[in-house]
Image 1 (cartoon, rainbow, N blue to C red):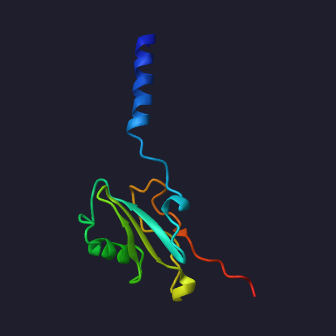
Image 2 (cartoon, rainbow, N blue to C red):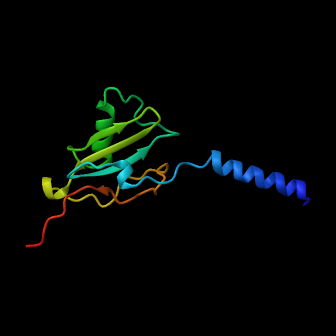
Image 3 (cartoon, helix red, strand yellow):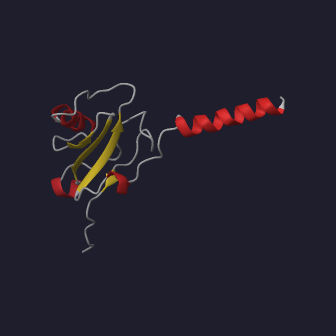
Length: 125
């Protein structure tokens, strides 16, 4: 391979990294805080399950299924496809804890991540 071809390939590679790569994974501080709640984020870029964020009725229904709780709510729903769902902490509602967020192949931080926890820790007796 000559030097012009190598240069062209390296420029194309760097361009693809800067334009096609999704943003870095979200962190709890970027998602919340939502006191006494756990949260999961979902991204719908190729197949939208929620097509209308106003009103949030569809997004709330999506969150109830995705987070396995009738108490789940959509806190954020963007037309770009991002939905942030929350539900109360297990210690507050006496429900089964959520081990992982529902599968999402478009989630940047992982397909099945541990929910972001904003639960207040209880002091040991």
